[in-house]
Length: 318
Image (cartoon, rainbow, N blue to C red; front, side):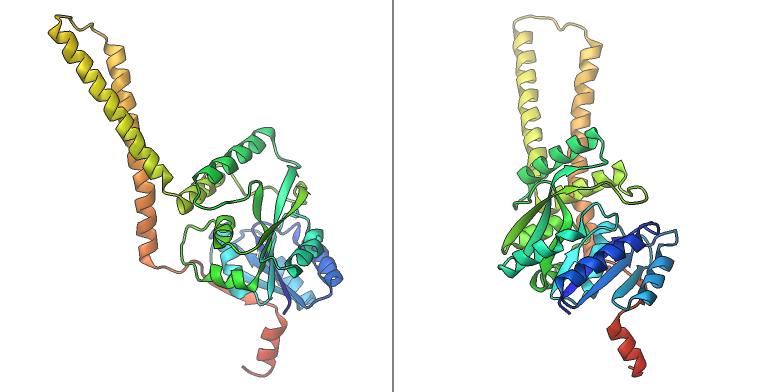
């Protein structure tokens, strides 16, 4: 198998047929053996039924159904364990990332790249405040992460079998794949494009989920938040010593303290908030250690359909 196209799906019943049509057209144009692997991340609608139907129409379409909603990153992780291609194109099901970039990505990989990632020049159908948040987030992530993560990139990329194998060997539960791929190194090449609006449906990325991904991205690759918390503790400790010295010096000079309940409570609330913030940062890292040490599987597969290889095994009673 030369090429695998990996597509995580969630509530994508309306757009899967168009997605497979465009993917099939571009894969045939490349002129190599291929498969399309659709991973249903526990969709509550008819997404799985549509995947089954598409796999019956085209044996190069495979479907993998997870036991529940594991989240986008783990859905992609599950697919990486099932793909058979020497090269793997990871693309979302909403068609915001154009499959037609595949030939250009393939040429870049022919020239020796192991990771050919799509880099967005613009985004259609995204509000201004979200665009600002994205830009700020990528800049903060680059500043905090221990590796160079290209800005304005997602999981839309073509990776080699070597990178797939290495990603599958990385056991962490809180996965930030674009960062993990960048951390692996090897030759990385960008392909710039303008991102389209969604073909159908609504985005499953709520503000809460986006914040969760941001936290995963930062805490998975950096201990700088811990250092920042320690620095805050040192700074406020010095300020407290200065305040104590000022009070003692004023008392020795015979100055009387001015009654100021509001200012006193402001200081108490500020210091208390700082303490809770520092404890929260430590708790985030401690919680991740607790989850990792359990050693539970990253994902659970409920059902699998399609694939020529699977049919051959069933035909021969294997």
